Image (tube, rainbow, N blue to C red; front, side):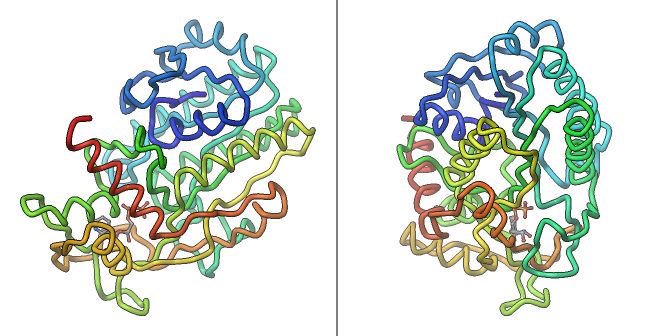
Length: 319
Ligand code: UDP
C-alpha cells in the first residue's frame, strides 16, 4: 500500500487487516506520519524509486495506491509538483507493478475529476472535466489504468472519493494534515476558546442557505470500500470506476451546526469570500458502488463529526 502512513491509507490498512489481509505500507513520509503506520510494517521510500519499490512489490499480490498530493489550491500554485508526483511518479509505480507481475490495482481517485458538474447527483457518466491540476492529474491516472487494463490485463478499481472526513472509532488514528485546510477539523478547532475562528468561504451560492454543499463520507466507510474493491478483483471482477459518497449533501452551515452539537460549544465563524475553484454543490450518486461492490456508507454526518472531535481531543492532549 503506497501512502499507507497517510490519512485514508492508514484507515484502509486497518480495515484490510480486520478482513484477514497482510499489509505492507510504503510511504516516503513527506506528508505521512510514522504514528499512523504504527503496528504495521512500514517501508520508507518514494513511489518513483524503482529499486526500493521492487522488492516490496515482489512480496505482494495487489497494490493500493494512496500516495498523492491532494491540495486543490496548492495544485493551482504549483502544478509541477502535482504532475510530477500524481502523474510521473505514479506511472513509474504502475510500470514497476506491471513488470513485477501485479495484476490487481486499487486507486484513490476523486470527485475533482468531474470539475463543475452540470447535474446533481453526480453519476459515473457525468463528463470528466477537471478544473484544477489536482483533478487533471487524477484523471490522467484513471485513463492510464483503463488503457493498461485493456492492453495488459492489469485489472483495477478507481474509487472517486467525495469529501473524506472523520476518524477511526478507536481514537488511535485520524486526520493529520499540515497545514489543515479542511472544513471539519477547522470547524471543530474554531469551537476552542483560544483557537482561530472559521472563515466560511462564500455565502452567496445558489444553495438553500447560500453556502457550499458537499457529500461528506466517513473515512472508515471509504476504508471498507477498499476491502470490497480488492475482493471484487480477487473474484475475477472486471476493472471498474465508481463514486464513493453517501448521496446526501450538507452545507457548510450544517457542518458548523453538527460541530457545535459535538463539542457543545459555539463555533466562532466569519463569512468570507468564495474560495476560487469551489463548485456550489458536489453530491454523489452512490448506486454503482452498491451494485458493483455491495457497498454503502453506514455513517452519517453526526458520526463523522463526533469521531473527528474525539480524535482531535485525544491528539491535542498528546496521548
Ligand atoms: N470551507 C470553508 N471554510 C474553510 C474550509 C472549507 O467554508 O476554512 C468550505 C469549502 O469552501 C467547501 C467545504 O467547506 O465548500 C469543504 O471544503 P474542504 O476544504 O473541507 O474540502 P474540498 O471540498 O475542498 O475537498
